[in-house]
Length: 172
Image (cartoon, rainbow, N blue to C red; front, side):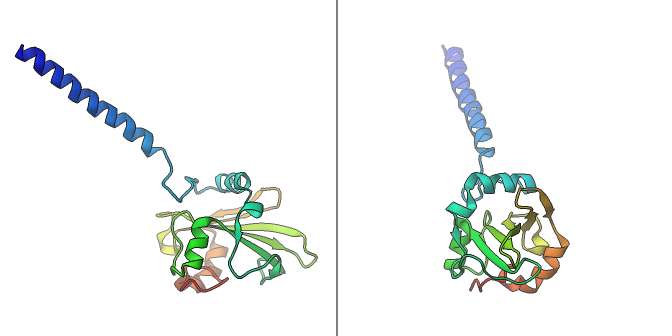
């Protein structure tokens, strides 16, 4: 009787542990809330932007308008979109963007033709020395012009390190 009871208890405990292990494995693969679970790669970010319909569904950077005057190297005119994580940091004057924040900027020429799309994507642990930003630049058709720890982007934006590497408005 004792052996049978011990066997049943051992079986139940093993089943619970195994079930917990299986459930934990499933959760590990799910993205963290707010991050979108996007890989830090040009293709993954572009695919996400297209799936999201960023230019139609996302908010514009607070205080900006469609095709506001922009500085080089970005273009004569800019339209800057932000996902919810980025919008919360801007409007909440948090001083810093949270993991998963994405800024997508349409860059237009003087004749108002879309030249390229610039993206900043905050990825925790990606590049702590430079604010954990993943940088990307795309042609209008989605071809990747630059991605990753782009020196050209970092060298310019480091002047705004105290403002989490952005120029558009103060975050505090």
